[in-house]
Length: 536
Image 1 (spheres, rainbow, N blue to C red):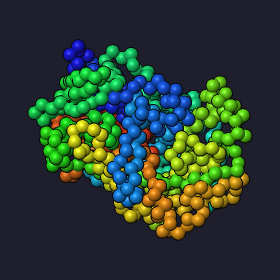
Image 2 (cartoon, helix red, strand yellow):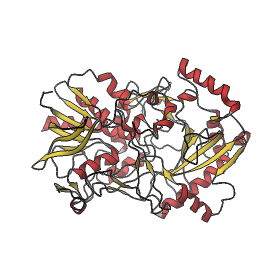
Image 3 (cartoon, helix red, strand yellow):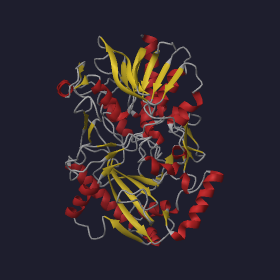
Image 4 (spheres, helix red, strand yellow):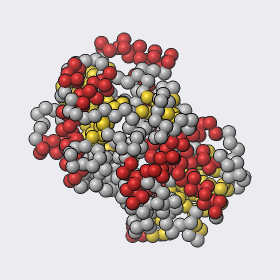
């Protein structure tokens, strides 16, 4: 790299995609790569210890802590949108669940014109990253020896198995592997952990290569806008330690700032819907109507029960000796409750026989989650998230001015089809919790509460309580239509030397957690970028 701050590739965002991309591109010692991250290094023990996810969800040092605009279909409530602000990005603060989605998700992308993104095309890119640590894992669907450790939970709570057995009472099948082509059923999730510790993309892809002389990693550096010259991205302007500076790209600038950050940087750079940009006082550089549009997320609502049993995790006087033992298990063996990702089990189900594939996902917490916004509640219990896998509702990321935070409108439940599916899913979650295998825990439903049972009451409950499971995508969607932002090689339409590589390029959301797909997107993008460099 040169002293002038010129690099072959400048990557904005060191998260689930950016960290992977930096690893793959800098593997060629002839290429210089600058990776820019607004947050700090990932040294916090809350990142290392899986149970630290509870703290990280509200931690301003490692989390952007965005909020939505008032959601019109959710009684005007603002919804929390946590996004990682640290090396590893959201992979450093998420629930660590390793899920890829359904074959049909990716085949739909290809059928819509995104050539090379069908399931059979992208499966090798999933396998390349993966180091699956389960003995005898299916080698067709899984990889071993990759950078990212994917593991079974070391000490899953006994409640998980009871919930799976309870679902079986309703003829919901068991699913031993959620990362086959067409996952369906209930089981315990695999997680991105290595030896009981969180294995973020920062730990997996960056830590082992930080000594590479051709890789420059900048933390605490917030990108303000792109620099453009005659329709080409030439670098970025950033603020670090109170100073403004420019980093130049000889080859390409790559936005990997996520489904909120990437479109926001484009808008601040004058790339996006022309009327919006001039309306908030920006200077239009390139009219691209789809920037910030097509926002999708998994709308979610919970059923929370308290329990007489102390088998679930929780805080109570009788449980204090156990809590001390759990602390010792972590200190001496990286096991026990502190190695839990909290959302330990779950599954994919169909709410009706008419569905061609699962339309609902459950996330099971073997503990009593607070329904009042607290970090913890006194007592024990079981909590079940129910989310709609392929929502019809759409939102947007926009700006009202050049300064301040982006305006995020998730548009949750603005399409009533999502409400109908969520209503069915919540009813099914309640049914499972009331089956025999769960009886030994002595559950009492806190919310919605047994008194709420009519469709009208449950709709009102959902409007008052629904949120998301933090999977925003789609705001720089790839494709060739008038609202597409990138082409299938992830190049921004109409701007040379600029790509977007993160979950924002998904034209439609995948049927499951989005961290593993974001890593896959970076793997595929790195291959395409290096191919394009050779043929340039």
